[in-house]
Image 1 (cartoon, rainbow, N blue to C red):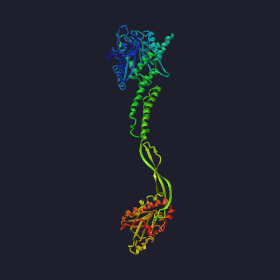
Image 2: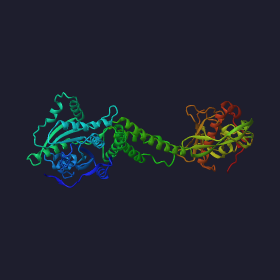
Image 3: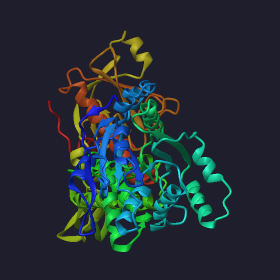
Image 4: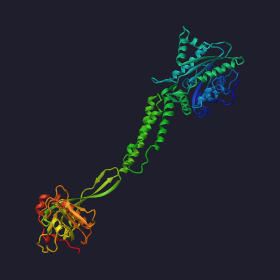
Length: 612
């Protein structure tokens, strides 16, 4: 015998005043099983050597108490455990399988049940229910010889199946049977059990017993074990242990492994329901093992981990909806629960998880909405309410004196504009400002004196006469002219010839009629030119200056008292004003109220002063 010493069995199911209870020592042993569980149930006749065989299955010396006394040794159920890897390593021919088992360890849990050849009682019934529900490997032991009484004892134990209430489509864990005739002097072959089960029987009770055994176990094996004094005894023991190890598989319900916490809960449920209702509900077992033992912890873990997936919200997030982790957590639940066959429990726990996730997400959404209602910015809008309007001439004695502008009397109303962080805009009611204000309707003439500069000084103007330039040998190319830019016009005259207020100036370009552009000479920093905005079309009206429709008027600022930049800036702003004024007035009003005539000196000089 090559047995390991130690590892004593622990009491699991015991009785006090005929009332069953689960012993703390057995539950403590089960709680310490760190992996998947392979339950092997040792049941059968009393005093047939079950406890001894249970110790030998685990290859442990006297793990379960046994004796030669006629008195029963085991009451209720005792339990012991060993890693499958250790047993495979000790089993000749199976050592190589130990390495494979180390990747996902499996533990043999042997439950040694009290003898069952006493009169049927509640105690026996509860022990049998243990065997039926959790024993995926059932080792039924009878002593001395294979008999009809032994088959009757096995079928009587299986009758406990009637106490397990199954829903439609529900199934108990698949079980395999090792039928052992222990301490026998007789020789049996491996087919002994199958021959007996399939033999024709005239007695109805015998037929029913055999049919129950056939239906209860997917596989059945027969083992005959002789007295321990005979030479082949150890080989027979090794054969039994090897067969049980080859049958190894984890206890599962509904596709979920029944681990230590679930097994403890399942055993407590069985004891409670059998004692209170004389039956065990399979839905209750499924809920205990699959629902509370696997699906509920899975859902709770995913719920706890969800904190790492939920966004941290310190301010309004307009894209928060895109960051919802709930669908991902539910998908992960679906993935990890895909092997569970109890669809109803899966749906129930998934709905619970969804509800909890949605509750957390709704709280985050509500917080985001609160942030979104906070004000992002506050502005004030105003509008003019027209009270009265009157068209009046611009006045004065300048070039635009006859332009009639629309003078409006308005009151100003204001309102507050609140822009929320979520993008919504809220407006207060319009409120009157109180005082009336005079405004000019035409935008070009609003703030006219500030945005339309005037400039006056002597410039050197290039003569348009080619003949004059030839006769004077080029000395007549540039002539001194007094120039004024103002009111959307550029005006020039000979300061020696034009001296009286009523004298017409030498030339003028009306930018309201003639679209123009001011071009700075690239070679001479003092020279700039006035050209038609569209060279191919020329000037729209060239009657107020000489040189024709396509003339380019060139000036040199040397000695004018202003830089070329001053002149160009003033000209460009007057060109822009003229463009805006023409848009406000229309070309017909420009021709009528501004005109295209050559202005007189008093018009040209009104409102401007010479620097030098």
